[in-house]
Image (cartoon, rainbow, N blue to C red):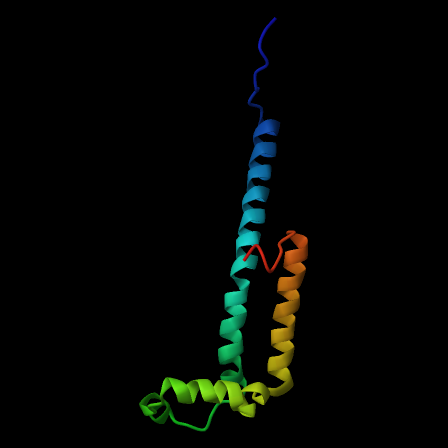
Length: 115
């Protein structure tokens, strides 16, 4: 009675390598999904400036000194932040949110617990 041994054949090697690659890809996709909210946050902060730039030169923009309170008030009370960029920005952000939703379903991630 001989102990069972793993016999290294080309077929076994290929099978092992492909399952390792699949595991790595699956792990990478889960990590991508977990970091995606940060990307959406960055997109929502900058996309509106790309689609509908403000009318300041680079020099004016960089020399503009504003307090934290002014910045927060602009974000909370300014309708400009919510409407700037229009439908293009809305659609892109909606697409990104749908993508993260679909990935969460695919990888069985709970948005409120796994992030």
